Image 1 (cartoon, one colour):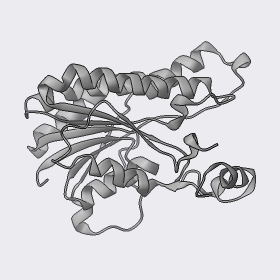
Image 2 (cartoon, rainbow, N blue to C red; image 1 turned 120 degrees about the vertical axis):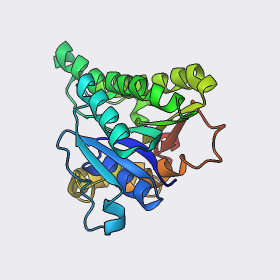
Image 3 (tube, one colour; image 1 turned 180 degrees about the horizontal axis):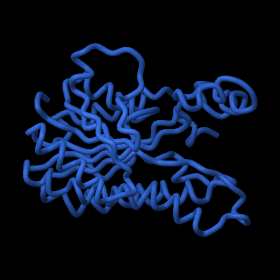
Length: 248
């Protein structure tokens, strides 16, 4: 893992920050791409961990900036590129009857188009190293019908389709593509809502374990996919929702 670099988008907060932390704990170097360019906000960490983080300000919607960030990290760090985690995304909700098409397109662009473009940009970097892994962060909403969430559900379903198509097309180059689809995950951004009030009551009723997952649950799964013995796993969507989507 030493001197192997993994790009993580949306790495400054939430699930992305925790992914950056766990990857660094396992010895990977992490290109932390976010709009702010901040270090991952996960509390106090050791100098050894923070030394493996390489933050760059980059909006995933700006493909020129995204390409420049990847190129800058590769050239300045002189490390082989092991993979990409497409984590950056957005959730909004609105009654479908009132949904402006511009808002629908905006969510598709952020949650799906940016995933495809980032994957295209990292492809030659992985190919020249003999392969690698792209992990997309989807959602279990990709297979559900959720009121007021047509944009989010559609965009995350698109992530699953992108994953399958790229996995098939790029397999000959040694590139794996996997979609991790979390359910309800508590982060610093939503923990208060998930731990009290109506949402808490809903989760206790709907999730068999009666509580949401944690950002570290996602991060541990993502980091484990970069194990060198998992090259035959590709094209799949792995649901991480505490069995909520299969519960009756």
